Image 1 (cartoon, rainbow, N blue to C red):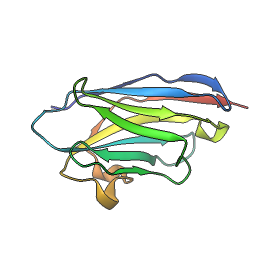
Image 2 (cartoon, rainbow, N blue to C red; image 1 turned 180 degrees about the horizontal axis):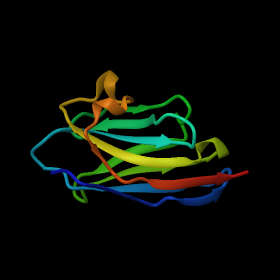
Image 3 (cartoon, rainbow, N blue to C red; image 1 turned 45 degrees about the vertical axis):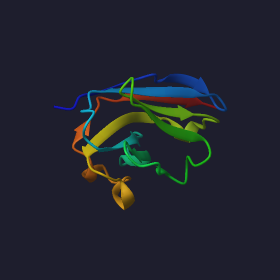
Length: 127
Protein backbone atom coordinates (compact mmCIF):
# COMPACT_ATOMS: atom_id res chain seq x y z
CA UNK A 1 0.00 0.00 0.00
CA UNK A 2 1.47 3.33 -1.07
CA UNK A 3 1.36 6.07 1.54
CA UNK A 4 2.08 9.73 0.84
CA UNK A 5 2.73 12.39 3.47
CA UNK A 6 3.21 16.02 2.50
CA UNK A 7 5.07 18.67 4.46
CA UNK A 8 6.68 22.06 3.92
CA UNK A 9 3.66 24.27 3.46
CA UNK A 10 3.33 27.60 5.19
CA UNK A 11 2.79 31.32 4.77
CA UNK A 12 5.06 33.45 2.62
CA UNK A 13 5.00 36.85 1.00
CA UNK A 14 4.67 37.27 -2.73
CA UNK A 15 7.98 36.70 -4.48
CA UNK A 16 9.12 34.23 -1.84
CA UNK A 17 9.89 30.52 -2.09
CA UNK A 18 8.80 27.28 -0.47
CA UNK A 19 9.78 23.67 -0.97
CA UNK A 20 7.13 21.04 -0.47
CA UNK A 21 8.09 17.47 0.36
CA UNK A 22 6.12 14.28 -0.05
CA UNK A 23 7.43 11.22 1.77
CA UNK A 24 6.35 8.32 -0.40
CA UNK A 25 6.40 4.62 0.45
CA UNK A 26 6.99 3.54 -3.15
CA UNK A 27 8.17 0.09 -4.19
CA UNK A 28 11.63 0.43 -5.70
CA UNK A 29 11.01 -2.10 -8.51
CA UNK A 30 7.80 -0.41 -9.69
CA UNK A 31 7.32 2.55 -12.03
CA UNK A 32 5.08 5.39 -10.92
CA UNK A 33 3.71 8.62 -12.25
CA UNK A 34 3.94 11.21 -9.47
CA UNK A 35 2.11 14.48 -9.38
CA UNK A 36 1.47 17.64 -7.40
CA UNK A 37 -2.01 19.09 -7.34
CA UNK A 38 -3.57 22.09 -5.64
CA UNK A 39 -7.03 23.18 -4.70
CA UNK A 40 -8.04 26.69 -3.74
CA UNK A 41 -11.31 27.39 -1.90
CA UNK A 42 -14.25 27.23 -4.28
CA UNK A 43 -12.14 25.91 -7.15
CA UNK A 44 -11.54 22.50 -8.65
CA UNK A 45 -8.36 20.59 -7.93
CA UNK A 46 -5.79 21.26 -10.65
CA UNK A 47 -2.60 19.54 -11.72
CA UNK A 48 0.53 21.58 -11.03
CA UNK A 49 3.41 19.29 -12.00
CA UNK A 50 4.04 15.65 -12.85
CA UNK A 51 6.86 13.25 -13.54
CA UNK A 52 7.65 9.58 -13.99
CA UNK A 53 10.01 7.75 -11.67
CA UNK A 54 11.58 6.01 -14.69
CA UNK A 55 11.51 8.58 -17.51
CA UNK A 56 13.18 12.03 -17.64
CA UNK A 57 10.16 14.06 -18.81
CA UNK A 58 8.56 16.52 -16.42
CA UNK A 59 5.28 18.30 -16.89
CA UNK A 60 4.03 21.65 -15.61
CA UNK A 61 0.87 23.67 -15.72
CA UNK A 62 1.27 26.86 -17.73
CA UNK A 63 0.59 28.92 -14.61
CA UNK A 64 3.69 27.58 -12.82
CA UNK A 65 6.06 26.94 -15.73
CA UNK A 66 9.52 28.43 -15.03
CA UNK A 67 8.63 29.04 -11.36
CA UNK A 68 8.05 25.54 -9.95
CA UNK A 69 10.29 22.48 -10.20
CA UNK A 70 9.25 18.89 -9.49
CA UNK A 71 11.88 16.34 -8.52
CA UNK A 72 12.15 12.90 -6.97
CA UNK A 73 14.94 11.64 -4.73
CA UNK A 74 14.92 7.89 -5.19
CA UNK A 75 17.28 7.26 -2.28
CA UNK A 76 15.10 9.25 0.12
CA UNK A 77 11.88 8.09 -1.57
CA UNK A 78 10.68 11.68 -1.45
CA UNK A 79 8.94 13.85 -4.03
CA UNK A 80 9.62 17.58 -3.98
CA UNK A 81 8.04 20.71 -5.39
CA UNK A 82 10.32 23.74 -5.33
CA UNK A 83 8.18 26.84 -5.66
CA UNK A 84 9.84 30.17 -6.48
CA UNK A 85 8.46 33.63 -7.25
CA UNK A 86 5.25 32.74 -5.46
CA UNK A 87 2.11 34.73 -6.21
CA UNK A 88 -1.09 35.21 -4.18
CA UNK A 89 -2.91 33.09 -6.75
CA UNK A 90 -0.68 30.16 -5.76
CA UNK A 91 -2.51 30.04 -2.42
CA UNK A 92 -4.10 26.60 -2.09
CA UNK A 93 -3.96 23.23 -0.41
CA UNK A 94 -1.27 21.23 -2.16
CA UNK A 95 -1.44 17.46 -2.57
CA UNK A 96 0.96 14.86 -3.88
CA UNK A 97 -0.37 11.89 -5.79
CA UNK A 98 0.89 8.63 -7.27
CA UNK A 99 -0.22 5.91 -9.65
CA UNK A 100 1.52 2.77 -10.85
CA UNK A 101 2.41 3.56 -14.45
CA UNK A 102 5.41 3.37 -16.76
CA UNK A 103 4.77 6.90 -17.97
CA UNK A 104 2.69 9.97 -17.20
CA UNK A 105 2.01 11.25 -20.70
CA UNK A 106 -1.04 13.36 -21.32
CA UNK A 107 -2.85 12.11 -18.21
CA UNK A 108 -0.50 13.67 -15.65
CA UNK A 109 -2.74 16.68 -14.96
CA UNK A 110 -5.94 14.69 -14.36
CA UNK A 111 -6.71 13.81 -10.76
CA UNK A 112 -8.70 10.78 -12.01
CA UNK A 113 -5.43 9.26 -13.22
CA UNK A 114 -4.03 8.86 -9.71
CA UNK A 115 -5.15 6.46 -7.01
CA UNK A 116 -2.88 7.35 -4.10
CA UNK A 117 -3.12 10.73 -2.39
CA UNK A 118 -1.58 12.53 0.52
CA UNK A 119 -3.52 14.56 3.07
CA UNK A 120 -2.34 17.92 1.75
CA UNK A 121 -0.30 20.85 3.00
CA UNK A 122 -1.50 24.47 2.99
CA UNK A 123 0.37 27.18 1.11
CA UNK A 124 -0.64 30.80 1.67
CA UNK A 125 0.94 33.64 -0.30
CA UNK A 126 0.24 37.19 0.83
CA UNK A 127 0.60 40.27 -1.33
